[in-house]
Image (cartoon, rainbow, N blue to C red; front, side, top):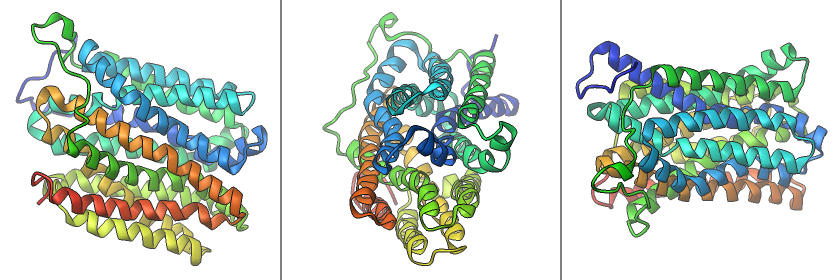
Length: 399
């Protein structure tokens, strides 16, 4: 039976813990980003409008917001490992259920359940970092966010050229395929996860707190910044496929999505080595926020093969703030408060991320101009920069 990690784990033990954190990150993003490559197929099969496409992408993010605080409660009552394990199992089941959708409503219901399951995991991941590798918080965060980026990259990179042809072009079987991989992760987590932090709060003398401190301005600035970063990334994944079809370049879909997500993977691997150097620094926000705006402008006005390069730049520009912000809750919170801070941040950030894609789709539908869907995403990139500036003035968080 796996044991609890020691305060100073051996190299083999550290590798096992980091591998599990990485797999947890994969499971939290793979089911969400498996959808964009097959959106044109779902669009035609279930007759979705662009507003509905925006809602489909924004819905799991909305569930991330609604279920983040319950996820914090589960961590406090069940323990961080059990919460994570149950979240991965539920994610696999709910994600597979999307393949059985017969109309937009049933697709939305299954998608909402998937988002809820992933949301349960999200406060657990920073808590696992603090519990398992307390002396290596930046590294642990970089590892599980690398897993997130890897999970997000798999669907866009491999679905169109490999998985769909293998499965006869069926978007339903494609979703089942990615869901089955999440089920395998659940089995690995159950078999090798250390029995850490599993004592329910009711069994100890002082109950664990789980409700976020909404009066703490740090939670709000983290939430706004993380929401802006997420929105730029998820929104680009949502609307880029249909945008390319509209401008007559569907041949660029696989490459654009692959580089949008694959470039994030390269950035994430780089941050594994540089996490300690860029952690709690201002300059990444000042650099990558404006760079995201430039990439979005290039997608709209340069067009053609420039879209692929611009998508890659946008992927890198979204990945760096994503990793850095996720490292802040475990670094700035007391050990028993990490899940509360993270839950508050996720609630605010994904509340933003669910609203903006719907606005993007509505702008497209109302104006009839595909490029208008990207304007709110550019605004969000600027908000990321503003958040970085604001955090430098808050409790000396950044330096």
